[in-house]
Every structure is written in structure tokens, then in C-alpha cells.
Amino acid sequence: MNAILDRLRRPVPGRRILLTGAAVVTMDPELGVLPRADLLIEGDRIAAVGVDLQAGDALVIDVTGAVLSPGFVDTHRHAWEAQLRRIMPDVNDLGEYVTSTLAGIAPAYQPQDMYVGTRLAALTAIDSGITTMLDFSHNSRTAAHSDAAIRALAHTGIRGVHASMRPHFGDWDGQWPADLTRLHDTHFTGNPLLTLRLAALATDEVAGPDLAYGHHLARTARDLGIGVSIDAVFGLPSSEAVLGWAKQGLLGPDVSLIHCTGLTPQAWQAIADTGANVALAPTSDAQIGLESAIPAIDEALAAGVRPGLSIDVEVALASDMFTQMRALHAVQRMRAVHAAYGTGDQPTRIGVADVLDFATLQGATSIGLGDVTGSLTPGKQADVLVLRADDLNNMPLNDPIGTLVLGSDARNIDTVFIAGQVRKWAGTVLDVDLPALREDVRASRDRVLHASGHGDSRV
Image 1 (cartoon, helix red, strand yellow):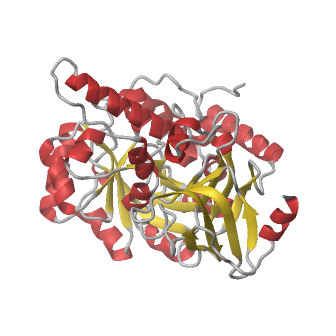
Image 2 (image 1 turned 135 degrees about the vertical axis):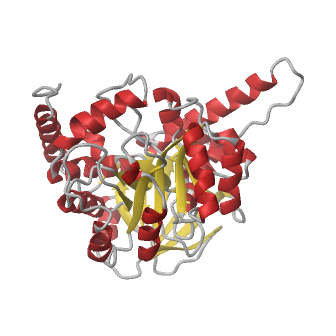
């Protein structure tokens, strides 16, 4: 297998790779699930999916006993916080998180800390099968902070979306949103794996009116031809904001609304009517207790909106998409049965295919990349997972989607391709010096905690 890896790592334009013998979960509505099939990668794209493909001079890799699937898409993660993982696992509410992390620790971050946190988050994403990650980078205190976060995405090889926003609190250079033009021209014209978006908040409740989405920010994004991701979409104030945006023509397929917890039926109808997208954060809503604390899956589906999924804040939450899928699957089905209990009504439950759709194709669509990734469709980018279905926790393979959603975790992901390039092989993320990374992460954590008055070190 090392010989195969050596061949994969050699720079060969238009290289052809044939993965053979796996169960293929395409997430393409027309192709569906193929119980035993092949997938052909040519260069950075998927060339073909089918049974007994003939590929001539392709490098053939036998993946019998595996499941192939599209890479997961994380539609919203505050990646700069990664070196603060689980520092407050039992955070009680949004206010506690904002006070501790955004107001208390974030102002101590230097550009190098942005780089370390974002790189750690992106490498962890790749390890757990997330091939596309939207970094909602809301600690851009200087242009150098933004540059560092973008470089971290580029250096890992992930399909990275940098959603830029100024910090909520503390000193900063006042460069945002004007600096988006420089970012666009500097970082996003020569790297097809990187995408720029504007990040904003729904209302002025958390950090004032400058961060609230409206005409000025919408015009900035549209002048640059980039999408918008709006965080903290909660409750009645955000519902009123959504209705206002719809009336003013500020919503559309280029806008993604994050959380959407506790919105009114009228707001949901406006989202559906304008074609705006939704990114849910299942464990964030439930565990931190955001607004109603119930992920808005039923409300989204009732409005005809199929959402993407996201990780949100690693200071308190799990880092992987398997957790998000399982949490949403369980919570929605619990709510459905509970609502029907004792009534004789038939509960309407989502299934494993739904949550995998949210974690792949719908996630890509919600951040403007639905034509690029999210399914194993010929012509799309080759963002592919090879997941071992014959491992102890997965054998025997009976249902490929059920195995992906309910049985698997990061240890089962053998190989990850992003744009046809191998990023994880035989269970190990490539091009990572783990001892050096550990040293960088610990040093960054200790520095920001000390500088922010939270102590000199942790375990």
C-alpha cells in the first residue's frame, strides 16, 4: 500500500485513479446507492461511477469491504477557537459563551494564534471526513489575522470557505468590511479550493448594529460577487429581521442563515420564498440551549427547506459530523414520536438518508458549492471518503447509509480525497508533524489564556 501512496503523491497532471469493489453512496438523486461498484477520478474530478468500469492506465485501488461517499460539508465552524477545545464543556447559555470566549479570550489572539487554531480545526475536519469547511472567522482584528486564517486553510488542503467578520468586542483595526476586497484579490483568485464569503450577525443584540446584516453588508458582498453567512439567527428579533430582508430584496440563494432556532412561521415562509439557505447546528442548539434549544429541522422541512449541518464552537462541542447527524436524527425522531404519543397520529420521522443528505449535498448547496461538491456525481470535484465497513464496529455491512450515519466514526475513515488529492491515507492524515503541531497548539493556548487573564496553562 505504501507503493500506491508513493504513486498517488507524485505530481501527475490528469492522473486517473480507479477505486474498485466498494459500496458507493453517491448522494446523487439519480445514481443512488450502488451495492458494489467503481469510481473513477480523473485529475481533480469524478469521471465516472458504475459497475466494472474500464479505466485503461488508471492507478487501480481495491477498496473491497469499504463504503465510498462524498466528503462531509461543515457549513459553519469558528475555527480559530480550536485550541480552546472543550474548555467550557457545560456552558449554560449563549451569554456565558459570549462573555467567556468572545469578550474574554478572543481579544488576546495574535495572527499566529489564528493560524494555529484554524489549521488544527481544518486538519481535524479532514481526519473525520469533512472535506469542505466554512470557517466563520469572527476574530479578524487586523488584516494579518485574516491572512493567517486563510493561509491555514490553504496549507491543509481542505476545501475551505473563509467567511470574514470583524470581532464582537475589543480592539481592532477597523479594516472590515473594506478589507474584503483585498482578501478577495490576494487569496481567492488562484486557489480553486478556497472561497470567500461575508459573515454577519442577524441583529444588533449581541455586538451592535455594525455587525447586523443589512443594505451596506449586502451591497459589499454583491459588489464582490460573494455569498453571505448570517449567524445567531434566533427567535422573534431575527424573525422580524428575516421579514425585513425579504421585503428589501436582501435574501436569496447566496445567503445562508445559521441556527434559525425559534423562528416564526412567517419567517420560515420568507426563507422558502426567497430561496435562502439554512445551516443547522444540532448539538449547539441543544447542548448550549440556544433559544428553544430544539434544532429547527421540522420547521425547515415544513417550509420546504432542506438544511446543511455544522459544528459551531469546539469550546463546548464535538468536532465531527457523525455527532451532528446522529444528534439530529435522534432529536427529530424523538420529537415526532412524542408529539404523536397518545393521539393515534402517525409520527413523521426523518431517516438516515435525510441526515446524510444534510451533511453532504445540502450542506454544499447551502454555502454556494452545490455544483462543486456534496455528491459523487461525474463532473463534480473528487471529494471522496473511503470508509472501512469491515472494521470491528461496522461489520458486517448490511446498509451502507445506516453504516455511515449510525455505525462509523473518524477511525473508520481510511482515505480522504479532496479535489483528487489524497489527504488521509490508511487512517492517517498526511503532511502533519504531530509532535510539532502539539507544541504549537499548547503554546498558543497557554499564551492566549495567560494574556487574557485565564491562567498560565492547562493540562
